[in-house]
Structure formats: structure tokens, C-alpha cells
Length: 180
Image (tube, rainbow, N blue to C red; front, side, top):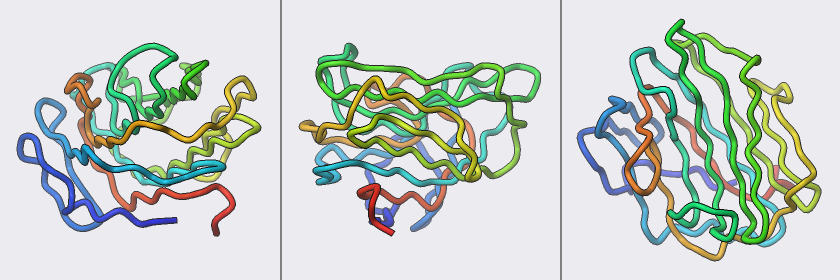
């Protein structure tokens, strides 16, 4: 796993950034690496901590890797949340391998804002698995891993600068699933 240095990202807005942590305002703060490519050939694992805060939009993307466009033909991995007005959120993971895409979401699995959570997203030839604090959150065998052919990584917002995230993000690592 490669631990990402968040100070190496280009900023949009004024996110508060250290080497391993960033705070986003939910309106105009984001981090970008246009040429980033994870170089994962067999699988991909994303690990990070998030601390969603109340007051942001309903749909908040805090991780977008790969193609910035829509549609299953555009290979990408996006991790986002849906923020409810009652102080809770739920996870939404989307992966497209260039032929088929799938969203994994369960609006009944709610978590309170204002706390740190550890997320892990694994995509292998067997499909997608998502974990929150080490417990399985979502799983599907519908879309197997294929290397992402398009570079680009954004944090705190989708690459086309919509769906801004309000909260903290820290300890981002990216690598192959079998790396320990």
C-alpha cells in the first residue's frame, strides 16, 4: 500500500491540508492529481479515514479515481456518502471497469456525523467489497476488476467539481488487495 502525501495534490479553494489529513468546507475545497495512476494490475484497495460533518450537500464525493465522465464505459472508482438532514450518513461506492458499472448503496445502514470512520474498498476479479471500521458494508460480484486506463484522482469533490464533501479525510493509502 502506498500512503498518499496530501501536500502533493493541487488545491481548489482553501482546504486545510497536512501530509496525511485534509479538511474540506463542502462548497469549494478539493484536491487534485490530474496525472495520478495507481498502477494496480490485478486489484485495487483504497483505505482512508473520513469524518463527515453536518451541513454539507446530500450527495458528497470524497474520492474519485479514473475517468471524470459518466457512464459504464468510463472506467472509474468513486467513494461518496449521502448526508441526511437528521445528522446521519450512508456509504455509496461506484465502480466501472469500462464495460459494466455498479453502485453499492444501502440507505438503511446509517452512521452519525462528527466521528472518524475507517473505510476500505477492495476491487478484485471477484468483485467489489466495502468495509466501515472493519465490518462488511457492501459487496457485489457483478463487476470484476480491470486496471483503470485513465489517470486522475480527486479528493473532496468529483473531478468535474460537483458533489463537494464537508468533513475530514486522513490516512489515504492505495495499493493491491493482496499487499499487507
